[in-house]
Amino acid sequence: MTTRVEAERGAAPDAAPGEAAAVAGGLGPETDLLLLLSQTSHALNTELTAGLARIGFSPRGYCVLSAALDGGLTQNRLAERCALDKTTMVVTLDELEGAGLAERRASSADRRARIIAVTPAGERKVAAARAIVAGVYGDVLAALPAAERGAFVSALNRLVNGRLSTPVACERPVRRRVPRAAHIVP
Image 1 (cartoon, rainbow, N blue to C red):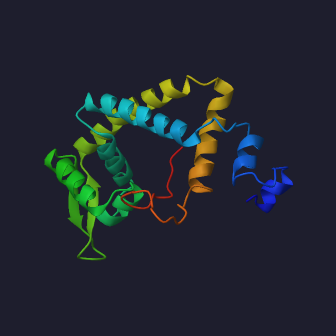
Image 2: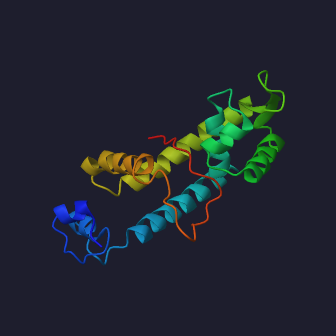
Image 3: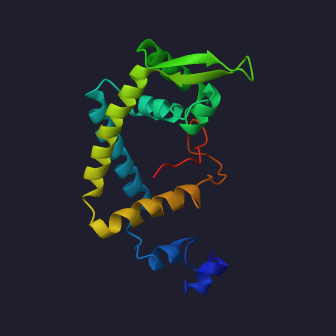
């Protein structure tokens, strides 16, 4: 069934939902946007994992420590910001504390909550990791023409913070540990 918007764009009355938008956006029916985005995400994650492993770090540890640099975040808020479930967050913080990179401190506002503090060693680790991450991102974006790089990142941010910010309800939901945090860093 064609939606009103698709009909206004000239979709055939029997067009599948979204088909008119895909054709209007320059995508033919053979373009698998999900596959393209999944492949890109997997390749980038693998490259970041390999790069950060050289300094004994992981993308997850980097996310947690760099977000904790803001200061004053509770363990739960930090888990939300990094899109981690509680169990994964506990394991990650155990690893970071064991390596001397972070500390859990009692919150002055809520004695049940723990504030995550980054140690000086953690600050150094984040600085080293930022250089690696910036290098990987720069190398990846260099594959695009210079004039398209900013537009590409901006478009991804608009999708993540707009149209794709909240999953639709479906009978068999795709598994994701926790809802994605709306916080995107350019």
